[in-house]
Image (cartoon, rainbow, N blue to C red):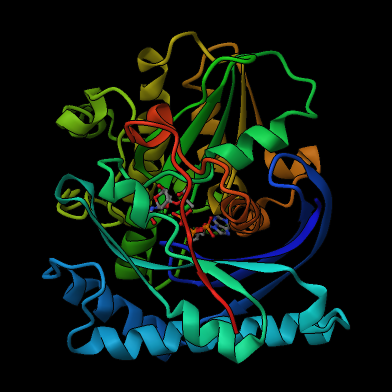
Length: 367
Ligand SMILES: Nc1ncnc2c1ncn2[C@@H]1O[C@H](COP(=O)(O)OP(=O)(O)OP(=O)(O)O)[C@@H](O)[C@H]1O
Ligand SMILES: CC(=O)N[C@H]1[C@@H]2OC[C@@H](O2)[C@@H](O)[C@@H]1O[C@H](C)C(=O)O
Protein backbone atom coordinates (compact mmCIF):
# COMPACT_ATOMS: atom_id res chain seq x y z
CA UNK A 1 0.00 0.00 0.00
CA UNK A 2 1.32 3.44 -0.95
CA UNK A 3 1.50 6.00 1.81
CA UNK A 4 1.79 9.76 1.74
CA UNK A 5 4.60 10.36 4.21
CA UNK A 6 5.88 13.69 5.45
CA UNK A 7 9.46 13.66 6.78
CA UNK A 8 10.83 16.24 9.24
CA UNK A 9 14.53 16.62 9.95
CA UNK A 10 16.46 18.95 12.21
CA UNK A 11 20.12 18.15 11.57
CA UNK A 12 23.33 18.60 13.51
CA UNK A 13 23.99 21.98 11.83
CA UNK A 14 21.17 23.43 14.00
CA UNK A 15 19.99 25.62 11.13
CA UNK A 16 16.32 24.69 10.92
CA UNK A 17 13.65 22.13 10.12
CA UNK A 18 13.56 20.49 6.67
CA UNK A 19 10.20 19.19 5.49
CA UNK A 20 9.60 16.83 2.55
CA UNK A 21 6.67 14.84 1.22
CA UNK A 22 7.00 11.50 -0.55
CA UNK A 23 4.70 8.77 -1.84
CA UNK A 24 6.14 5.43 -0.83
CA UNK A 25 5.37 1.86 0.14
CA UNK A 26 8.50 1.84 2.31
CA UNK A 27 10.47 0.00 -0.40
CA UNK A 28 10.35 2.29 -3.39
CA UNK A 29 9.65 5.95 -3.83
CA UNK A 30 6.71 6.37 -6.18
CA UNK A 31 6.74 10.18 -6.23
CA UNK A 32 8.52 13.14 -4.69
CA UNK A 33 6.27 15.87 -3.34
CA UNK A 34 6.99 19.44 -2.36
CA UNK A 35 9.58 20.41 0.25
CA UNK A 36 9.70 23.13 2.88
CA UNK A 37 11.99 24.69 5.43
CA UNK A 38 11.50 26.52 8.71
CA UNK A 39 14.68 28.24 9.93
CA UNK A 40 15.41 28.46 13.63
CA UNK A 41 15.53 32.02 14.95
CA UNK A 42 18.83 33.18 16.46
CA UNK A 43 17.26 32.75 19.92
CA UNK A 44 16.18 29.18 19.14
CA UNK A 45 19.62 28.34 17.74
CA UNK A 46 21.20 29.70 20.88
CA UNK A 47 18.87 27.62 23.02
CA UNK A 48 19.80 24.50 21.03
CA UNK A 49 23.52 25.21 21.43
CA UNK A 50 22.98 25.47 25.19
CA UNK A 51 20.94 22.26 25.12
CA UNK A 52 23.84 20.46 23.42
CA UNK A 53 26.20 21.63 26.18
CA UNK A 54 23.81 20.60 28.90
CA UNK A 55 23.08 17.22 27.28
CA UNK A 56 26.69 16.14 27.81
CA UNK A 57 25.69 15.25 31.38
CA UNK A 58 22.72 13.08 30.42
CA UNK A 59 22.69 9.40 31.27
CA UNK A 60 19.07 8.65 30.30
CA UNK A 61 17.46 9.17 26.96
CA UNK A 62 14.19 10.58 28.28
CA UNK A 63 15.55 12.90 31.01
CA UNK A 64 15.08 16.62 30.28
CA UNK A 65 16.80 18.52 33.10
CA UNK A 66 17.23 22.30 33.07
CA UNK A 67 17.21 23.96 29.71
CA UNK A 68 16.60 20.70 27.85
CA UNK A 69 12.90 20.88 28.68
CA UNK A 70 12.68 24.40 27.16
CA UNK A 71 14.69 23.29 24.16
CA UNK A 72 12.40 20.31 23.61
CA UNK A 73 9.33 22.54 23.68
CA UNK A 74 10.99 24.91 21.19
CA UNK A 75 11.89 22.02 18.85
CA UNK A 76 8.34 20.62 18.98
CA UNK A 77 6.84 24.06 18.36
CA UNK A 78 9.17 24.77 15.43
CA UNK A 79 8.22 21.44 13.84
CA UNK A 80 4.49 22.06 14.37
CA UNK A 81 4.87 25.48 12.71
CA UNK A 82 6.86 23.93 9.87
CA UNK A 83 4.08 21.41 9.17
CA UNK A 84 1.28 23.98 9.47
CA UNK A 85 3.05 26.33 7.05
CA UNK A 86 3.82 23.45 4.67
CA UNK A 87 0.15 22.37 4.58
CA UNK A 88 -1.02 25.94 3.96
CA UNK A 89 1.54 26.56 1.20
CA UNK A 90 0.58 23.38 -0.59
CA UNK A 91 -3.17 23.66 0.03
CA UNK A 92 -3.24 20.36 1.87
CA UNK A 93 -5.20 19.17 4.89
CA UNK A 94 -3.93 16.97 7.74
CA UNK A 95 -6.10 14.08 6.39
CA UNK A 96 -4.07 14.14 3.15
CA UNK A 97 -1.03 12.83 5.02
CA UNK A 98 -0.89 9.26 6.32
CA UNK A 99 2.17 9.55 8.52
CA UNK A 100 4.77 12.04 9.70
CA UNK A 101 8.35 10.89 10.36
CA UNK A 102 9.77 13.13 13.09
CA UNK A 103 13.52 12.79 13.71
CA UNK A 104 13.81 15.50 16.37
CA UNK A 105 17.07 17.20 17.29
CA UNK A 106 20.03 15.11 18.37
CA UNK A 107 21.57 16.68 21.47
CA UNK A 108 23.83 13.80 22.49
CA UNK A 109 25.11 10.68 20.79
CA UNK A 110 27.10 8.17 22.87
CA UNK A 111 26.53 4.78 21.25
CA UNK A 112 29.23 3.18 23.40
CA UNK A 113 26.97 3.92 26.38
CA UNK A 114 23.89 2.75 24.46
CA UNK A 115 22.67 6.31 24.58
CA UNK A 116 21.44 8.62 21.83
CA UNK A 117 19.15 11.52 22.65
CA UNK A 118 16.80 13.24 20.22
CA UNK A 119 14.64 15.97 21.71
CA UNK A 120 11.16 16.71 20.35
CA UNK A 121 7.86 15.50 21.78
CA UNK A 122 6.16 13.16 19.28
CA UNK A 123 2.88 13.01 21.17
CA UNK A 124 2.60 16.77 21.49
CA UNK A 125 3.42 17.15 17.79
CA UNK A 126 0.72 14.63 16.76
CA UNK A 127 -1.82 16.55 18.85
CA UNK A 128 -0.75 19.88 17.40
CA UNK A 129 -0.83 18.86 13.73
CA UNK A 130 -3.64 16.24 13.83
CA UNK A 131 -1.56 13.67 11.94
CA UNK A 132 -0.08 10.37 13.22
CA UNK A 133 3.60 10.86 14.05
CA UNK A 134 6.38 8.30 14.18
CA UNK A 135 9.41 9.37 16.25
CA UNK A 136 12.37 8.07 18.29
CA UNK A 137 13.74 6.15 15.30
CA UNK A 138 17.17 5.51 16.81
CA UNK A 139 16.05 4.24 20.23
CA UNK A 140 15.47 0.53 19.47
CA UNK A 141 18.72 0.25 17.55
CA UNK A 142 20.99 1.63 20.31
CA UNK A 143 19.12 -0.36 22.91
CA UNK A 144 19.89 -3.52 20.93
CA UNK A 145 23.57 -2.56 20.83
CA UNK A 146 23.64 -0.76 17.46
CA UNK A 147 25.29 2.59 16.80
CA UNK A 148 21.89 4.28 16.39
CA UNK A 149 23.24 5.98 13.24
CA UNK A 150 23.37 6.40 10.31
CA UNK A 151 19.73 5.72 9.44
CA UNK A 152 19.54 7.24 5.97
CA UNK A 153 21.26 4.32 4.16
CA UNK A 154 18.03 2.39 3.37
CA UNK A 155 16.76 5.54 1.71
CA UNK A 156 20.02 6.10 -0.19
CA UNK A 157 19.62 2.55 -1.51
CA UNK A 158 16.07 3.30 -2.67
CA UNK A 159 17.30 6.43 -4.49
CA UNK A 160 20.20 4.63 -6.15
CA UNK A 161 17.91 1.87 -7.52
CA UNK A 162 16.88 3.97 -10.49
CA UNK A 163 20.37 5.35 -11.20
CA UNK A 164 22.65 4.26 -14.02
CA UNK A 165 26.13 4.58 -12.53
CA UNK A 166 29.13 2.33 -12.41
CA UNK A 167 29.36 0.52 -9.05
CA UNK A 168 30.32 0.32 -6.32
CA UNK A 169 28.44 3.55 -5.60
CA UNK A 170 28.92 5.61 -2.45
CA UNK A 171 26.40 8.21 -1.37
CA UNK A 172 28.02 10.76 0.95
CA UNK A 173 26.02 13.09 3.14
CA UNK A 174 28.06 16.09 4.24
CA UNK A 175 25.98 17.68 7.01
CA UNK A 176 27.37 18.68 10.40
CA UNK A 177 28.96 15.22 10.46
CA UNK A 178 29.62 13.19 7.27
CA UNK A 179 28.28 9.73 6.62
CA UNK A 180 28.51 7.29 3.70
CA UNK A 181 26.37 4.50 2.25
CA UNK A 182 28.21 1.91 0.13
CA UNK A 183 26.03 0.12 -2.43
CA UNK A 184 27.47 -2.72 -4.47
CA UNK A 185 24.86 -4.57 -6.52
CA UNK A 186 22.73 -6.76 -4.31
CA UNK A 187 25.29 -7.15 -1.57
CA UNK A 188 24.43 -5.97 1.94
CA UNK A 189 24.48 -2.24 2.52
CA UNK A 190 27.51 -0.90 4.34
CA UNK A 191 27.35 2.46 6.07
CA UNK A 192 28.98 4.60 8.73
CA UNK A 193 29.88 8.11 9.77
CA UNK A 194 33.27 9.08 8.35
CA UNK A 195 34.27 12.08 10.41
CA UNK A 196 33.59 15.78 10.33
CA UNK A 197 31.22 17.35 7.86
CA UNK A 198 30.70 21.09 8.04
CA UNK A 199 30.46 21.49 11.83
CA UNK A 200 34.17 22.15 12.48
CA UNK A 201 34.39 24.51 9.51
CA UNK A 202 31.15 26.30 10.48
CA UNK A 203 32.36 26.78 14.06
CA UNK A 204 35.70 28.10 12.75
CA UNK A 205 34.02 30.49 10.28
CA UNK A 206 31.81 31.79 13.07
CA UNK A 207 34.73 32.34 15.44
CA UNK A 208 37.13 33.95 12.98
CA UNK A 209 34.89 35.61 10.37
CA UNK A 210 31.55 35.94 12.16
CA UNK A 211 29.92 34.01 9.31
CA UNK A 212 27.64 30.97 9.68
CA UNK A 213 29.47 29.01 6.95
CA UNK A 214 31.89 29.32 4.04
CA UNK A 215 29.49 30.04 1.16
CA UNK A 216 30.38 27.87 -1.87
CA UNK A 217 33.77 27.27 -0.25
CA UNK A 218 35.05 30.58 -1.66
CA UNK A 219 36.99 31.49 1.46
CA UNK A 220 38.73 28.12 1.78
CA UNK A 221 39.68 28.38 -1.90
CA UNK A 222 41.96 31.31 -0.96
CA UNK A 223 43.88 29.40 1.71
CA UNK A 224 46.68 26.88 1.91
CA UNK A 225 46.02 23.38 3.28
CA UNK A 226 48.17 22.16 6.17
CA UNK A 227 48.56 18.52 5.10
CA UNK A 228 50.74 17.69 8.12
CA UNK A 229 47.95 18.80 10.48
CA UNK A 230 45.48 16.63 8.57
CA UNK A 231 47.79 13.60 8.67
CA UNK A 232 48.10 13.99 12.46
CA UNK A 233 44.35 14.41 12.93
CA UNK A 234 43.70 11.28 10.85
CA UNK A 235 45.77 9.28 13.33
CA UNK A 236 42.86 9.37 15.79
CA UNK A 237 41.66 5.75 16.27
CA UNK A 238 38.18 6.56 14.92
CA UNK A 239 39.49 6.84 11.36
CA UNK A 240 41.17 3.41 11.27
CA UNK A 241 38.15 1.63 12.78
CA UNK A 242 36.06 -0.31 10.25
CA UNK A 243 32.33 0.42 9.78
CA UNK A 244 29.88 0.45 11.48
CA UNK A 245 30.78 3.53 13.52
CA UNK A 246 29.10 6.83 14.33
CA UNK A 247 29.85 10.20 15.85
CA UNK A 248 28.50 12.95 18.02
CA UNK A 249 28.52 16.42 16.38
CA UNK A 250 31.17 17.61 18.82
CA UNK A 251 33.45 14.57 18.84
CA UNK A 252 36.24 16.50 17.08
CA UNK A 253 35.64 19.86 18.75
CA UNK A 254 38.86 19.47 20.76
CA UNK A 255 41.01 19.48 17.60
CA UNK A 256 42.71 22.87 17.46
CA UNK A 257 44.37 24.44 14.44
CA UNK A 258 46.68 26.72 16.37
CA UNK A 259 47.51 30.21 15.19
CA UNK A 260 46.64 30.21 11.48
CA UNK A 261 45.43 32.76 8.97
CA UNK A 262 41.63 32.36 8.70
CA UNK A 263 41.69 31.36 5.00
CA UNK A 264 44.36 28.71 5.68
CA UNK A 265 42.33 27.38 8.61
CA UNK A 266 39.20 27.16 6.45
CA UNK A 267 41.19 25.41 3.69
CA UNK A 268 42.66 22.91 6.15
CA UNK A 269 39.30 22.08 7.77
CA UNK A 270 37.65 21.70 4.36
CA UNK A 271 40.42 19.36 3.24
CA UNK A 272 40.15 17.47 6.55
CA UNK A 273 36.50 16.67 5.82
CA UNK A 274 37.41 15.48 2.29
CA UNK A 275 40.37 13.45 3.59
CA UNK A 276 38.28 11.80 6.33
CA UNK A 277 35.63 10.82 3.76
CA UNK A 278 38.20 9.35 1.37
CA UNK A 279 39.90 7.55 4.29
CA UNK A 280 36.93 5.16 4.24
CA UNK A 281 37.97 3.73 0.84
CA UNK A 282 40.51 1.35 2.33
CA UNK A 283 37.90 0.06 4.80
CA UNK A 284 35.36 -0.89 2.10
CA UNK A 285 35.21 -4.25 0.27
CA UNK A 286 35.91 -2.70 -3.15
CA UNK A 287 37.03 0.69 -4.38
CA UNK A 288 33.98 2.89 -5.16
CA UNK A 289 33.66 4.01 -8.80
CA UNK A 290 30.93 6.62 -8.31
CA UNK A 291 30.51 9.11 -5.49
CA UNK A 292 27.29 11.08 -5.05
CA UNK A 293 27.43 13.96 -2.60
CA UNK A 294 24.41 15.33 -0.77
CA UNK A 295 23.83 17.54 2.28
CA UNK A 296 24.87 21.17 2.61
CA UNK A 297 28.51 20.28 1.94
CA UNK A 298 27.57 19.51 -1.69
CA UNK A 299 27.25 23.28 -2.17
CA UNK A 300 30.82 23.81 -1.06
CA UNK A 301 32.71 23.71 -4.36
CA UNK A 302 36.11 23.65 -2.66
CA UNK A 303 35.05 20.62 -0.62
CA UNK A 304 33.86 18.84 -3.79
CA UNK A 305 37.14 19.64 -5.56
CA UNK A 306 39.17 18.37 -2.60
CA UNK A 307 37.12 15.17 -2.50
CA UNK A 308 37.67 14.67 -6.27
CA UNK A 309 41.41 15.01 -5.71
CA UNK A 310 41.31 12.21 -3.14
CA UNK A 311 39.20 9.51 -4.78
CA UNK A 312 41.41 8.63 -7.74
CA UNK A 313 39.63 8.09 -11.05
CA UNK A 314 36.14 7.67 -9.53
CA UNK A 315 33.48 10.23 -10.44
CA UNK A 316 32.21 12.72 -7.84
CA UNK A 317 28.81 14.30 -8.53
CA UNK A 318 26.62 16.59 -6.46
CA UNK A 319 23.24 14.92 -5.86
CA UNK A 320 21.46 17.99 -7.22
CA UNK A 321 22.91 17.35 -10.68
CA UNK A 322 21.15 13.95 -10.67
CA UNK A 323 17.84 15.66 -9.98
CA UNK A 324 17.82 14.69 -6.31
CA UNK A 325 16.69 17.45 -3.93
CA UNK A 326 19.93 17.54 -1.99
CA UNK A 327 18.69 19.60 0.95
CA UNK A 328 15.55 17.52 1.32
CA UNK A 329 17.06 14.03 1.26
CA UNK A 330 17.25 13.58 5.02
CA UNK A 331 13.69 14.82 5.52
CA UNK A 332 12.52 12.51 2.70
CA UNK A 333 14.45 9.71 4.39
CA UNK A 334 12.56 10.12 7.66
CA UNK A 335 9.25 10.04 5.77
CA UNK A 336 10.46 6.84 4.11
CA UNK A 337 11.63 5.40 7.45
CA UNK A 338 8.23 6.20 9.01
CA UNK A 339 6.53 4.24 6.21
CA UNK A 340 8.94 1.36 6.80
CA UNK A 341 8.42 1.50 10.57
CA UNK A 342 4.65 1.42 10.08
CA UNK A 343 5.04 -1.77 8.03
CA UNK A 344 7.52 -3.35 10.44
CA UNK A 345 10.32 -3.30 7.83
CA UNK A 346 13.95 -2.99 8.98
CA UNK A 347 15.33 0.51 9.45
CA UNK A 348 18.88 -0.58 10.28
CA UNK A 349 21.09 -3.59 9.61
CA UNK A 350 24.22 -5.19 11.09
CA UNK A 351 26.36 -3.50 8.43
CA UNK A 352 24.79 -0.06 8.75
CA UNK A 353 24.63 0.42 12.52
CA UNK A 354 26.13 -2.79 13.91
CA UNK A 355 22.78 -3.87 15.35
CA UNK A 356 22.85 -7.68 15.87
CA UNK A 357 20.00 -8.31 13.39
CA UNK A 358 17.93 -6.23 10.96
CA UNK A 359 15.81 -4.03 13.15
CA UNK A 360 12.62 -2.05 12.74
CA UNK A 361 11.87 0.88 15.02
CA UNK A 362 10.07 4.14 15.60
CA UNK A 363 7.43 4.95 18.19
CA UNK A 364 3.87 5.87 17.09
CA UNK A 365 1.86 8.77 18.45
CA UNK A 366 -1.72 9.26 17.27
CA UNK A 367 -3.45 12.63 17.53
N1 LIG B 1 25.90 27.53 -0.21
C1 LIG B 1 26.65 26.83 0.64
N2 LIG B 1 28.00 26.84 0.51
C2 LIG B 1 28.79 26.15 1.35
N3 LIG B 1 28.33 25.42 2.37
C3 LIG B 1 27.00 25.36 2.55
C4 LIG B 1 26.09 26.06 1.71
N4 LIG B 1 24.84 25.81 2.14
C5 LIG B 1 24.96 25.00 3.21
N5 LIG B 1 26.26 24.73 3.46
C6 LIG B 1 26.80 23.94 4.56
O1 LIG B 1 25.93 22.89 4.88
C7 LIG B 1 25.57 22.95 6.26
C8 LIG B 1 24.18 22.42 6.44
O2 LIG B 1 24.15 21.12 5.91
P1 LIG B 1 22.94 20.15 6.17
O3 LIG B 1 21.69 20.93 6.13
O4 LIG B 1 23.12 19.00 5.26
O5 LIG B 1 23.26 19.71 7.64
P2 LIG B 1 22.37 18.95 8.68
O6 LIG B 1 21.28 18.22 7.98
O7 LIG B 1 21.99 19.93 9.73
O8 LIG B 1 23.42 17.97 9.31
P3 LIG B 1 23.46 16.37 9.52
O9 LIG B 1 23.31 15.72 8.19
O10 LIG B 1 24.79 16.16 10.12
O11 LIG B 1 22.34 16.08 10.47
C9 LIG B 1 25.72 24.39 6.65
O12 LIG B 1 25.96 24.51 8.03
C10 LIG B 1 26.94 24.79 5.81
O13 LIG B 1 28.13 24.44 6.42
C1 LIG C 1 22.96 10.74 16.02
C2 LIG C 1 22.69 11.59 14.84
O1 LIG C 1 21.76 12.37 14.83
N1 LIG C 1 23.52 11.43 13.81
C3 LIG C 1 23.35 12.15 12.55
C4 LIG C 1 24.56 13.06 12.31
O2 LIG C 1 24.40 13.78 11.08
C5 LIG C 1 25.02 13.01 10.04
C6 LIG C 1 25.50 11.79 10.74
O3 LIG C 1 25.69 12.28 12.07
C7 LIG C 1 24.42 10.69 10.79
O4 LIG C 1 24.94 9.62 11.53
C8 LIG C 1 23.13 11.14 11.48
O5 LIG C 1 22.19 11.65 10.60
C9 LIG C 1 21.65 11.02 9.48
C10 LIG C 1 20.35 11.65 9.18
C11 LIG C 1 21.49 9.50 9.56
O6 LIG C 1 21.13 8.96 10.60
O7 LIG C 1 21.67 8.87 8.53
